Image 1 (cartoon, rainbow, N blue to C red):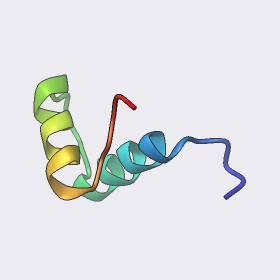
Image 2 (image 1 turned 45 degrees about the horizontal axis):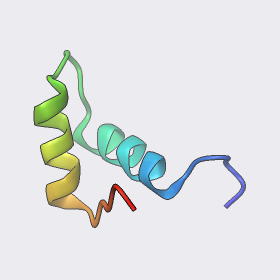
Image 3 (image 1 turned 180 degrees about the horizontal axis):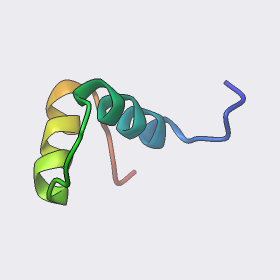
Amino acid sequence: MVDGLKPGERKIRFYSFKRNFVKEAKVAQFSGYVSEHSAYHHGF
């Protein structure tokens, strides 16, 4: 891909558009949603 995003950033953007956020959400809720619906791997 030539979009300049890292795989984790790409997953976060995809799931934010998929869920269609219309109002603000807490970071803990959103990160839980992303990690639940994707193979989000962080820290290494």
